Length: 275
Image (cartoon, rainbow, N blue to C red; front, side, top):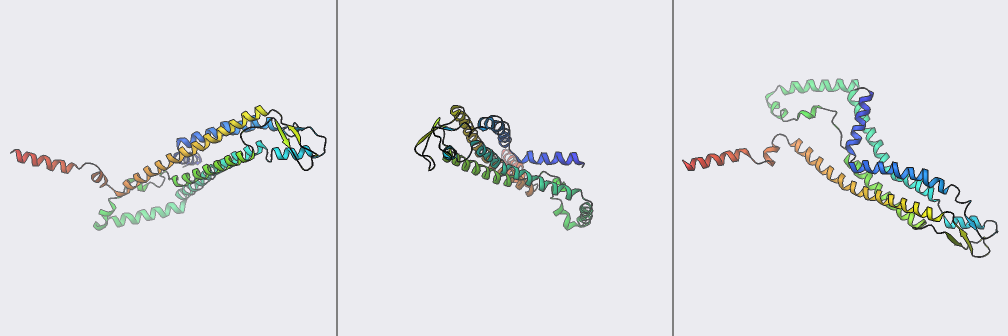
């Protein structure tokens, strides 16, 4: 397997362990969330403090009022929120790449291949005995293939739980710090200010619309995470059930499917009664 095949196998394993909802979530996060933050929020909040005007000439009053109005910049908060939401998914990808890369190196290294050849030779010698032949015949052909796609569904569920928790925490923090609207006028009563002063925010309507858009993206991301969690649980149950059936051997069909032998016995019994 060359480097291109190894890279393709890594991408295949990651795509296999990520549901279609997870792929949609990643597309929405990259194409909408990141692009909107960098190309819409950054130009809008670039000169925010310079255009925050208060009706006072007292030195330091405007800075204190701006700190009370925005303890954290909207743009920086959204940037940290997006990076934190992407962190569990990134850690999951690193975990998958690390484990798959170790399996590839282990499977194609010379000492490991010689060890497998020696083990296979010893297995063939042991299978020549009659007592061992019956036990060896129940093995599945797929067990000889050491390049089966590994299952990381449990790690994927863990990162989904972390992602939903981070999204919920940042949503609560967003409401606590900023609320839902950006006011056009902000009343300030700072220690440096001589009296109650009125401060005016630049482009409050545009900032309110952008805030609602970010709120919508956060809520949609949280909803996708919950749906993806449901899909991941269902896929994990299906895969575990399938692996259990494969490990049980050739007697599974007789156990779970309608028995043909019973049908034949009933047919012979009916013919005997008719005679």
